[in-house]
Figure 1 (cartoon, rainbow, N blue to C red):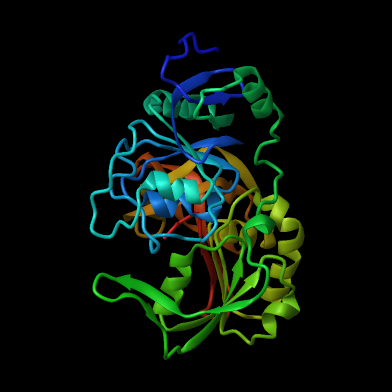
Figure 2: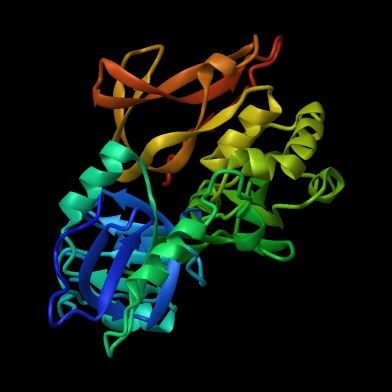
Length: 372
């Protein structure tokens, strides 16, 4: 249904959905136009980490929290050096930074990273639209002189193919293997360095967040990162104690075309394997399960996850738009946790899985989009 609201006189940016709905606003960040899938994130902190999470490749992020940009930006709170998100949508214009760690404003940081933003949007209305009708394709445009062609933006949104069937891991993965030894951030010392690793983990980079690699290093792991397209031989030649499958964007089934055969060989090697987000979904595919696109996805810092065995509910960060279907899992593979809906007693079929391994304590476990 088309938006009857007329264009405001001070408008220099617009968000146009594929159905012709228009949201007017004021631009921030880089000038230009970007097209992608609209999603929303409910977190009230960590906007810089969210914007640099490679799992947002191909997406325009709507922040439901209104005060985005109030603590500015810095060089430390990033998950990758080149953001993969297409743009951002805000309710309130960005204010001057008010934080001792800020080195620049969010607006300046967005310009440097080529990210297009729009503020002044009714983000509650947009979020309800995504909630009720699913994530639409959209085009976001910011031109300082206000030269906005709504019909052309609608056409671009309509022409964009969408995330289903799209392999984006190849766009965000590293190009060659490298070593990682940086550990978690400390207020007094900044990031640390792991100098005494006890285990060696090979991390397959489908769009890895730096903080996940830091957590591995902080747990006394020497981390070798390899590209998403690494072969079985490429991975096993590093003689790892275990293998980690990272988060990442796009459709797991599309990435699985080249990833699943490798993962099946790795499972046959007997090495412990675990995955997060896309890595978890690829592992499920390799075990014989299937994945599907969710109606609206899980993105935020307060998603409840229920332990199937104990009934306990934990609060987690989530960022995923595809899900493993537990009903598709073969015999010997079981869900251990479920991502809950509006209450602990109502859970969506988004699961953390485990494969039972006879006569061994080592199981292949993974998580369904836990982002940290």
